[in-house]
Length: 319
View 1 (cartoon, rainbow, N blue to C red):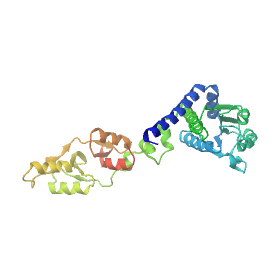
View 2: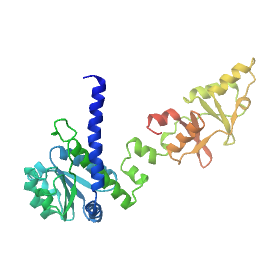
View 3: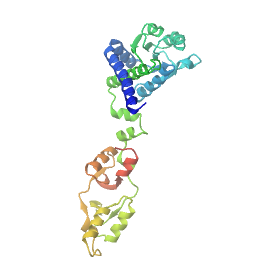
């Protein structure tokens, strides 16, 4: 099979799934809205049940809901009848996912799912199935055909289930006014959380290079080299006068034959860019990018606090 045929097959598979997603979109009705409101108004959590490929989909939906403010838990249908049913409390909602709606493990669970929860939502491609008939609310995930060339492997059907789960999560987010800062609370360790919550202070270098206006060029070079960031701050009476970078030193060397009398005040770059230690790290990155510079002075209520470096922020996933 040549590359063109491979691409053509991929296009065909995607076209089938896109068509099924459009069918899902056009089929949404009050049952979907009722599901969103029922989940949102529940005093307990959302339990999502599945088996086989639907179990993988259920796990993904649980992960999305938990990260967007809707407490959820996965329950594997095969494990449920061996003790895991105890996870369901009477104030909980159960969302049971089964494309056929007649899987033996699911059918065996239905009486217990109904009894132990306050509502059963069935996500199924067959509303007339046993799951469909037992459910208080039905989310119809019927597809005309799978993208699989044999029309057997769950492809379009699992895509539709996944997309419907995303739609539930998004609508619940909107209903609860869930904002980016709320999202960050559940993602403190990753780059998403860092970009939304991390402060400049977390990434300030412990090294705090400085010289006085009267410092000679030898002291300036030692301070710049020792800073590890290629920069030093010119200070006078605790006031920031400016900075000197390794670039400033190179330019001076190109223009001066006798450097013995050169002082920091002769090569200072005044009005340097700065950021307060309590600002978001992503704000510091925006300044660095805007002015195409590698370092920023960090201040604490206007006082020199340290240096922050663009490479440090990039290494930490700040963008």
